Image 1 (cartoon, rainbow, N blue to C red):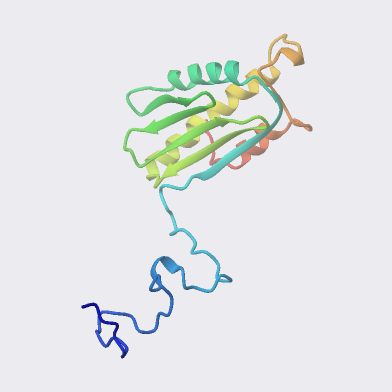
Image 2: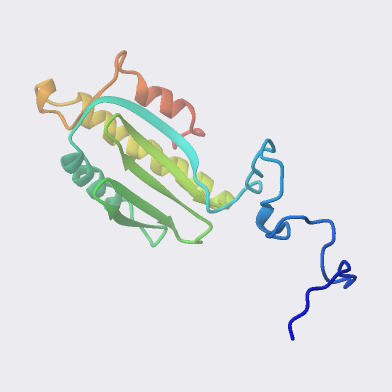
Length: 174
């Protein structure tokens, strides 16, 4: 006894203005020319690029090991906790859990991304740690009696990527 209604549905719970089968759900009836919604401001799940150092050559395994040891050495008084997230990512977590940063070794760059909503204490401590990391990268790139082809990394010419990255950070410890 299934009957087909001959008049439109007048139930207020149904959307009469929708003519498609999806009922306007999930934005499927929207005009395709509309721009996608932008993420909410300060979305803690999205990374914020802190700095990027272009490199012409990188030995990821050796550099990850050297920088990992450096970051472990910075784990003082429980302020920071270092973690190797993957073969090319080292994470540093701050004690108040407001934020963390990832040091990412890419084929053509060393990148630092921040995640979270950093507290003032985090921002000040992050700056000190990142200046220290840049000092270590500078040592690995330029110091010692090592042939260029044997270095863990070589910067893109003109070779000022570390100083440019340093210029984006707040002042360093005196």
